[in-house]
Image (cartoon, rainbow, N blue to C red; front, side, top):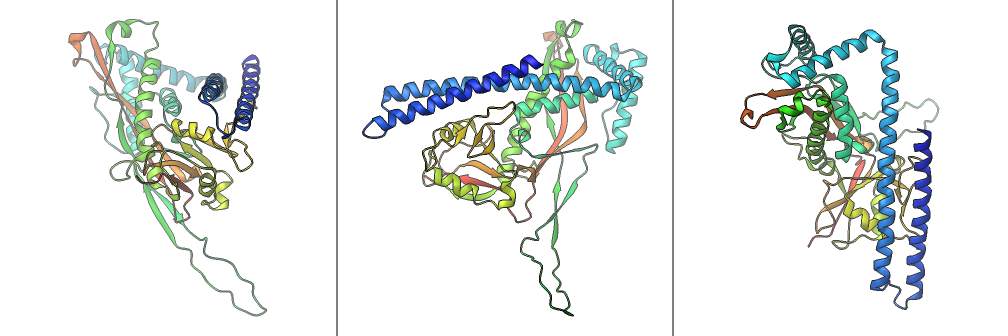
Length: 416
């Protein structure tokens, strides 16, 4: 792990050097040209250098994900030791039974494993206070597999990578989240023997619902199921995480909030309208940042898609300094004007009228995960293809909690 750590630090230093050389190249060429702009050949060379910075950024992110996985594995090992051998054996027993169900179906599961599956499923049903599938249907995803799916979703889910608050519940009942706006109320100074005034705080609430998401059917060949050397649980975990991660990301971003999660873009309010479509200016970025109350700017983040990031990388402040700066220290994020940013490919680009950039305290955005996902095994449906179908169901929700203080705002591009 130490070698991996040192490699990441070395790559970050290399990227910083390359970025400074790239920036210097552009500044020198612009200063040397009469019109202050790069020639087509110089622009091509500049973009090639930018591509080099981008490649290093991708390599750094991949290396840091590997390091994070390695650390999580070490933490998991330590956690298992702390929980004790008995609980570990119980988990392993259920995972073994669940693996048998995935590979062989219910008819191929031993009586002991069938009993374990049924007992665990009843426990989950009891916690959820809802009706589950019967013995011919699906069974509850093991805890370790479920947590692995949620962790892996972050790779495909922009809002989950932010400071959004993740709320985990054992059932799907509606959650009432209280709201209160006391920003207009202030205290007072009192003269001697003077009664204090009164000012009530108005409270409200918003409901955070849970909606059912499906992975759609995942077809697996009999050969793969019969190969004991293949970790079928890991295979399905990766597929489920990618599919449900992408689906929830779309709704967590632009969901309407009516019969579906409310997206973070949907819940945001206008902070600034750009003067034109397809372009950003330094002044517009500053106006967006200062449209947020100073108390929310302390932990604020930016969010936009990858195409908008490219535009940000070409922006400079009033002193000619680039707004985008690469992180150098291990896990130090790249920043724009000092703020961390999240890439969310479900956000619109800089086309006319689109909400291209979010800024604010992302912890006001709530993501809900309901434990106890289900996997169904469809044995007969694809029998002629020598395949078995699997389909997973998980419940999730999201909501931007805004009591009128507008913690997250967006920059909208000019209309056509």
